[in-house]
Image (cartoon, rainbow, N blue to C red):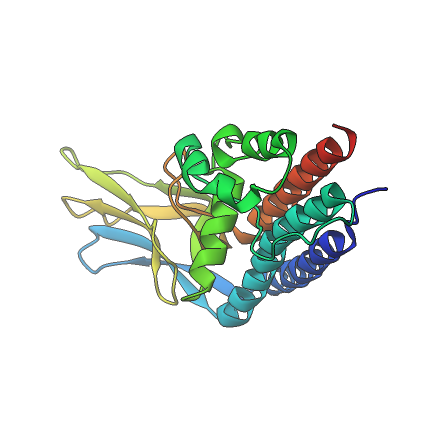
Amino acid sequence: MTIDLRSVLAKLGRAQEHADAVKSEIAAWQDSNPYMVTRERNTEFTRYSLVVHIATQPPLMRWTLAIADVVHNLRTALDHLIYAIAVYEAKGESSPPSKSAYPICRTPEQFDDWGIGKIKTLSAEVQAIVKMCQPHNRRHKELPPLLLLLNEFDNRDKHKLLQVAFASIATGQVGLVGPTPEGAIMATHLNRGEISDGAELVVFTVNVPCPNMKFDNFSFAIEIALWHEPGPNGDNRTNATELLTLLYQEVRNVINDVSAFALFK
């Protein structure tokens, strides 16, 4: 007898369908040259800035809903996994409890306090491997633990929309050249917030007029991002398509690890 993972794989497949669709739409929008960047300066020659002008607004609401569908299917795939293992271990002798679920806990103490209750009908060996697959044991070097992010997004979507933003400067390069008077002090300000039409991407300010300064080159790539709690490096938003790929891979890996252990323990 093997573990029946048909519903688990169906949920994974549905998540992949939604992810592929939203990734394709985001790529098409980015390839359409939806925005341009202009050089601007004030009349006093003390403020130089690069300003973004959006020609085609991204359909953030549509993508937000699609990303939520990805998240929900990934999260429920884990719950289906626990139920499938419960059925396998029961060998048809009893009906698994309908409230069994895959616990995702922030700390070992949370798992011991309430997480274990969600898998209490499973064998001690399977409980142990589920504990090993908790977020505190599967850290990411740049992001919060991926299972923790998945749970955060799924819980948030139950009450309000995920925070998807036309937000981040993914890459940028800028050059400002020209002579400056003696005693000139220049400061640089990079926009780290959400990007909207007319927003300044970068600003150079100087304490005295510098009429001969000019931008000699610049390039920017602006990404669609998902906001989340800060990771180890302090970043609180990540390219949406990259994050969807990471979440899918993490869930797939956990399913493979737990189901293989349950089958061959």
